[in-house]
Every structure is written in C-alpha cells, then in structure tokens.
Image (cartoon, rainbow, N blue to C red; front, side, top):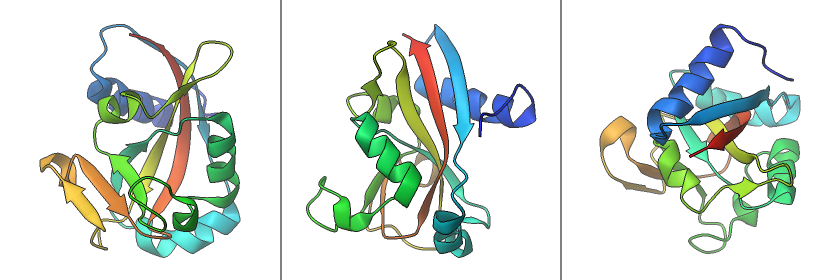
Length: 151
C-alpha cells in the first residue's frame, strides 16, 4: 500500500534521512508491506516497542521474495546457511553495498520492525541497540519499502 504524505510518511522518510546522512535526498515513494500471513508469524515478537532498522537487498527478486514470504532465515547467505537476517540501525550501512538500483535509477531499502525482546544472533556496535543486528526467524517484519534517489 502506498503511503501518502502525512505522519507515517514523515516518520519513515525522516528516519531514513536522519540515518542516511546524505545532503541531497529525494523520497520517490514509500510502500507499506501488508502481508497478513507474515505479520501473524512475526507480530508477537515485533509489535511491542520494536527497534526500527534497515535492510538492503541486492536485487528486485530478493525484495519481492521478502515482501511475499517475509525474512526467511533458511534462505540467508550472509554469515552462512540459516545464520539470520542482517539489519542496521543506520541506513548508511545498508546503503553502502546492500541496496539495489532499479532501471529508473531509484534505490530501494526496507525499513523494518525488529524484536527488542529476543536477543540477536549477533550484534556489533552500541547505538540504537547495535549498529548491526542479526536476527533469527520471525523476529523481523519488513514494514516499509522506500524508493529514493540522491547522494
């Protein structure tokens, strides 16, 4: 569902802008992922005071699979088979090599709800609960996909 200008749009785009650190950034659009099946699997873990973190994927097909199936730990390749889903508290980390550019020249990034109650598989850093967190199955919900451009 496309998010229109308003409080939700401002919150998501503002968080991206704040943590990306670009001086010139244009938000093309924000889409809220509404996948009831994935939400039911994840909601007990991410619905209470979640971290808001970023996840980049390197292809449109990966993005599509995440929207349709959620984050599938059994499909992860970074860190080894079944390791977990990698997330960053700062969009700049995800942007640095983990996002893709579509044929129109727009970058894509997920803004996710991440369980605060369940310990991560791995964590590095300290701000906002760790710059990098690797989370297990059903501990991350891909809430929004943002398309943007700039630099």
